[in-house]
Image: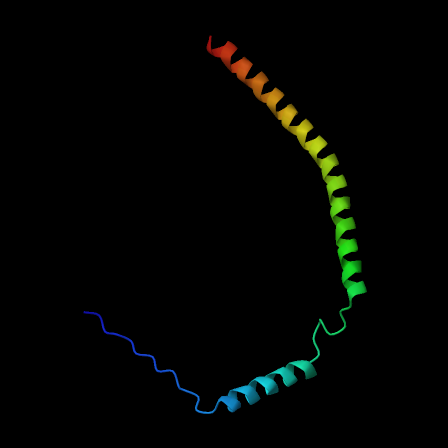
Amino acid sequence: MAPSVVLTIPHELNASRKKDNLQSQVQQLVLQKGPFRNVTESSLLDDIQRHATEVEDREEGSDDNLDSATETVQATREKLFQIRAEYVQMSS
């Protein structure tokens, strides 16, 4: 039989201590400066609009890439069929 593991979790005797600890943690977070400190609704809307225009620009560019990729695939297929036809003629 495998040895069992026993974990003991200390019990907090004073519930107010936990509350004070939470309040002190919240106060520490409020005092800290972070990257989200100056976020406003207008800055978020600007970021969303900027992201949308970047996506549209990428999609427009990808249409050009698709056309060239399709031409490349078509050219590769044509070469493959030519080589196959030559191989069939040689083996006949």
